[in-house]
Length: 272
Image 1 (cartoon, helix red, strand yellow):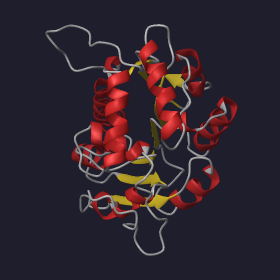
Image 2 (cartoon, rainbow, N blue to C red; image 1 turned 180 degrees about the horizontal axis):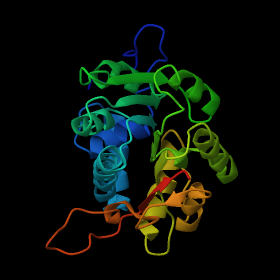
Image 3 (cartoon, one colour; image 1 turned 90 degrees about the horizontal axis):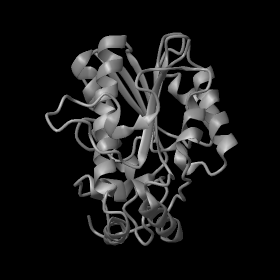
């Protein structure tokens, strides 16, 4: 992608290609092309500080596929609210869900202008299903719910997906309140899928990488302990194996044994 800060569509916020952005850097780590030199430079420095970053970027993406297949297939969820979707790559939520159940309805939520320019790619879906995209910020859950209700029926079970996005809400209590507000809007039988970077004694290089990111990039990132991440699921029924490393949430069978832990934890829980 060329380093042109004027690539936003008319009426949309301008894309700032002079400051690294998390969505573009994540795209870079996953092998995408929707990023700028500033993102690649910051991404390479974070890889130097924390060589395992590619592993947890891939683990989080693989988690999405496994969890959505479980929710659409075994649980029978037909509605998905994916908040903080980021830039499209392979096997987006709607592709995974509609491969299992073509009639699935998906609403993507993001507020990054580069993601907005790719909305058309996200909107392609099965003829039987619906895929929509809304421009909204996680800090404003009422706006998300109001817009999403035009596509989703919140009287029916819905999977709320928050992969790597609650970590951009700095205040932990505020982050809990936002997630609770969204889950309050969906009925019994709905599920929450959430992942979040951690701070833990076993991952000292992660702390250094986050410190660097917060000095140069946007939006700023808040690490939390595994115990704090478990707090997002309060009042919900956690599915096995509970709050664990993304790589260890129901991994595909492997002759190599249990996957290595990554500094990204997750959980899937049912609303009773």
